[in-house]
Length: 212
Length: 224
Length: 193
Image 1 (cartoon, rainbow over the protein chains, first blue to last red):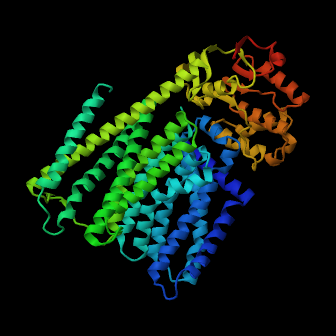
Image 2: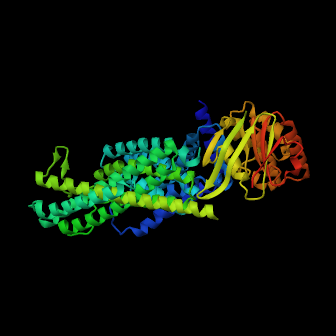
């Protein structure tokens, strides 16, 4: 039970910080709408529904990337990750809390993005919403871990997309497949991805943030 | 290792000579694809060797995380480095084969090729990560975790690519065993052994070089 | 014995930070780690805290919850208030009644009147005071303090003197480039070159 309490305290702190600073979420919202607008001009007239869905997935992945880049900024500024690592709390709780916070931001961005996509391009069906929800979990789980890796490096903001995008390719495959109407196979694949990489990130985060 | 290296190198040379002889003079010419099919005996063993290298790198990463031995970190890095070299060769030979068989340099419908592109991007990011962090236990930890993600990404990506494609790549290995004649299979095995030998040789040479480098730096530090 | 280090060494690549450090700290002792800038005081304390892995040697230290570590940086969330910062760490350190204890510490270090203001509005000295509150919050048995007098004004430094004297029954390791201030309290010295 202390584990859940630790996660709750840490995640609550991230939401509180965002409420104060209002930096990440507005940027994500603006970015996703701007990206969809750009896509309108990038798509040739008469492009099909499936092509537009592909662009929706690109917009979502890059919006998530924007949030993930900011995820460890408060911890980085003051060496706070050291202070968190020294507490008796399990290190994986730090990862889980951060993942949940980023997931919350991404979900809010999507609450705006999906209706906007429906209005700008074409309707969004239930399967797409389910795929987006499942993909979010995997994206945030893997993204938070790679985000923690990137902040240790010198290149930081530059490094995260390089580390993250190859790992996100299967998510895009599953997401586009599911929303293009190819069925439950793809949703199943997303569940598999979430389970495998969620577990791996949960188990390995400790090594990324702590030497001992 | 200093004793083993010349032996491994000699064996590799012999295997390579045998493999090349077998590929060009022994293996039968493919009925469908003709002479160009012989690149199969390079392309597939190189690709498999690359998997072996990534797998070995991940194994050493796991050893590092368990025992915190600096040696394992270096071995993991060198294995992945060699894996990327073989991965690049896979992309090149696959591209040549695609050109010869289908008339295009790049075929998104070829699972193996697409998977290697994803892995190539992934492991290049591994180097970016490694060279942007100061050497030390923190870097070794982070790189080891990323290397472990790599071996998990291989099957997951493979599944994803399978799910996403249309089918034009010839499938040689199926669940019923290799669809090759005995002579083809023998040639393939010799070629695969030669590639593995090449990997072992290059791995040992690079590892020895990196270790000598480290010793040299230690000595220089002692002198100043 | 709270902390035992035997033949401890740390290198960054080939650069030696410190070597062959022998250290035993029991309750009731204050070990002063001295040395010029760049002699490895900060790195030694980070190794002792468990933030950095030693290159060689043996190290026995208490559980994580038993250690209080004051680092080079104050380790505070700038957009949170002192109370919110302490509430987070109070929970993570499983401090029972951490609210009461936070209030007491804030009062002691003269921060009670700014308890609802953001840390980003604080001067460096006030941040150092709050950092000390965070370190003392879970009442650790072993305290590792890296330049604790940093940025403190005369009042703050006097306050820390008194606090250190009250912590006489704990094990303390204190790193400083200027040992005069705490010399009278120190039971031993470890000089890094």
